Length: 329
Image (cartoon, rainbow, N blue to C red; front, side, top):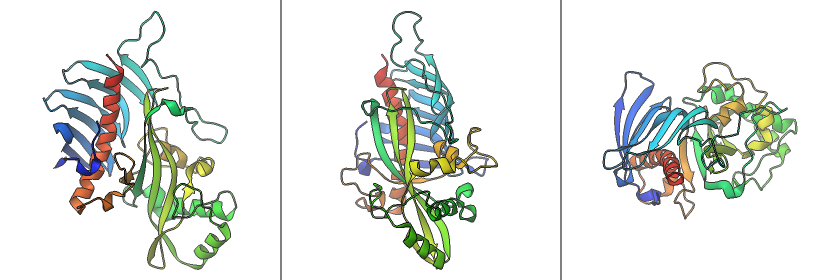
């Protein structure tokens, strides 16, 4: 489904459900692809259904913050079922259709052998990923705000954790001008600035990769890093970039309490792995040859900005649906 994201035609119709925290929405994307979905606490969660322009259902399932859970079915434009799965977690599934043959070599789209497991550091081991198996791979930059993200923002929690890691010499951080994590900052200079001024966490920029892994036939996000956005004596600024793999083992020791999106979430690292946060895409590599932030696209305004953000979220879901269809006969 190749198209320039700056020219996606999207019509968003908003319906408020009886749940004051949820919004039931309908979006019409390119080729008149219609999507019905839910926004709950700033996250795409709940029932999801999409339809071809001929009115035939294309996909149906349940999302939890953009990740698939429970039963998912995808049909082609003639109404023929092409894939059915039961998701145990975003990374584990049982294949229901097509049936797995009892004889001969196991074909493509068979059972996913990966299972969630924690290592000695108390963090979930990512599945091994071969570059040649990443048939769909894009980077995304997101922005998190305090609203709907209490676990991260209350009392500057995530910022204070990072600052303590810097002070103790357990991690290094990188200059804000380079989110490729190549320009190191001196920890002493950061500590001196922070210690002298009143600081408040007001946002978090997050960089991640979205990958469809042919080896496991699963789509997943892997966080690369984030940048705290702070107010220091009333002045807002980006502070630094921290490389996420460097601090995972420490976040795996930070306990999370209260209600979360998935029962697996016990620590802050779990929270990021399972994406228990509300965010908005501010940039992506999807059809973005000039490496531009969405806000800098031509003829941008507030309404179009929001529509493009939402269209990208739906595009990710539908591109995976298209992949499923392309892999079955």
